[in-house]
Length: 87
Image (cartoon, rainbow, N blue to C red; front, side):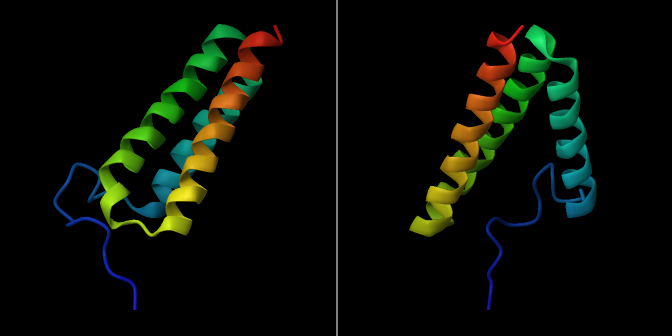
């Protein structure tokens, strides 16, 4: 049985997972397609969002979940740097 990570009264409580996924995918794609400083800024914005969510849920995550989320954050930062430096 899976327990909720956080109580459902925060600002993202009313956002459906599908909408959140589509927004993140769209911002990521725009960051890659636009490239340069603007694209890197969009990817950096996503990285900040991931970092904030990771910090907010850190206490309730298991070790494997923490490692996975930190890996996603590091990959996102690497992609943002790559987009910034390849222009």
